[in-house]
Image (tube, rainbow, N blue to C red; front, side, top):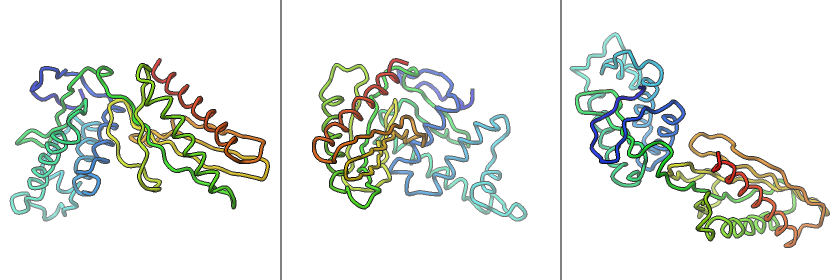
Length: 266
């Protein structure tokens, strides 16, 4: 077992070990959450604890070792009795984790904690792996036009695609691979952190246009892992206008819903 199990405080808690991929996903979602995104020191400390458990879990983790590795204390002069930085920051980390799971993380399927008097992570799975998880969240980013002309066409395509995806995902409540959609309020390319059980995705795209031809390149990004899960190019040999926007949006939507259907079946 990579991470030690804490006492069962929930009727649903299941003592099942985390594999490396799941542990890295839990860490990525925590680091992207509001409580940790703006705290570099807390993020570094949490990352160190996770990586230590994944790589050298049999070695003792002492206050002195953490002070040197995370807080860059000089090994020649560092004394934990005189410098309480590790104890203070561990206390802050415990409180931040508790606050996260009491607010935005209350539905997280896995919870991390640091028991009092200990510097090792503990975990608690609230439900068996693969069961009772929330639907994926798809966040649509504004598409980018990378040719001199075509900004209006690109914005129209993104609007058309948003409508098609809404019809496919949000309004089809009986669909097995039901996906929740989120459209950012700004045009920022960095996706807002979205916490979900089965995954959070960012849909990004670029458009190139010529007088009688257009190409849309679209990719689906797994936010937690920073990996491209699906990518495809769509060409149309016709003048760009509303009809072309509708045709492209329909093809993109069909291909993307097909990806989620295959992912759900596997």
